Amino acid sequence: MYEGTPGETIRSAILDVTDRCNLRCKHCFYYREEHDSQELPADELLAGLRTLRERHDIQAMAWCGGEPLYRREVIEEGCSIFPMNWLFSNGTMPLPDIPNLMLFVSVEGPKEIHDRIRGRGTYDRIMDTVSKRPSGKPVVFLPTFHKLNSPFLEQTVAQLSRIPNTFMGVEFFTPLKAYQHIKGYPHTELQKTDLDLTWEERDAIIDQLVRLKVEYPGFIVFRDRVLELMRSDAAPACIERCNMPRRCLTLDVKLNRKQPCVLGKDVDCSKCGCIFPYEQQARAEDKAGGKETRPLFL
Ligand code: SF4
Ligand code: SF4
Image (cartoon, rainbow, N blue to C red):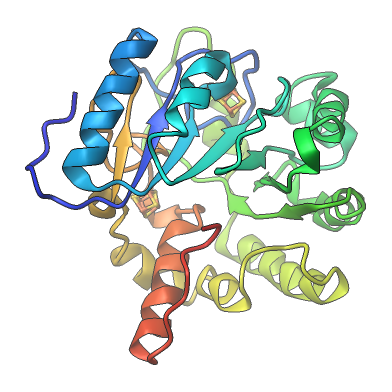
């Protein structure tokens, strides 16, 4: 378990709840690297989380994986440890009804494109899961854009925005610096050569997103400034300042710390497609201008 300095404040954390998942998505950031897959028993894991919460004053936990709902009982109990919780699920299992848990579900595009990336039949399963979610809770869809699905961005927004009480965030595929063959993960070659967007392609997607935000008011949750900071002319400076490795406690299934972040130990930060460094910069600008903004999704 992570042995941090007592008194060291780390307000947010991300946990690989489990190493298990029923899918093998083409762009997966988890299975493209080797992991320690030995899960701690639920009581030991929860006791460790309580210790970390006390020691570092963790206020928000992101439950990830693998597919975190394989350990539903851990999430149900774990949400009582942290004031705020986010669940990142592939949407193929029933979503839990927990008041302080925000739901993020991965959808990669229209049905045919989504199924090509995540596996046949998964789009319909997700839509079924979302339609049966408890108390009609809000759901944030979270597509990761890369070469296979970016041509379908507009269609994706048009279709998903019709589902009541749903929203959409956006990430770009972030490659690794170096890939190794991983047993049981068949998409290494594809990740290496066919997914990564050029900066020009990313900029073109951002142009579209800015336009779609006007056409579908309130659906795409990222602020315009954050999208601007993801552009090729601004992104490298944001990445340079990314404090994710210090500000967020990223934990594996045994509560050991993962560095630099959840995207993997060999991640190519220079092409970071995660929202974090851009949101961090936008909030720093707000603060410098005397404006306090809440962290995204809190
Ligand atoms: S659902 Fe998530 S963890 Fe599972 S294979 Fe897909 S991207 Fe990876
Ligand atoms: S991949 Fe992105 S979020 Fe992760 S440490 Fe690198 S710059 Fe930060």
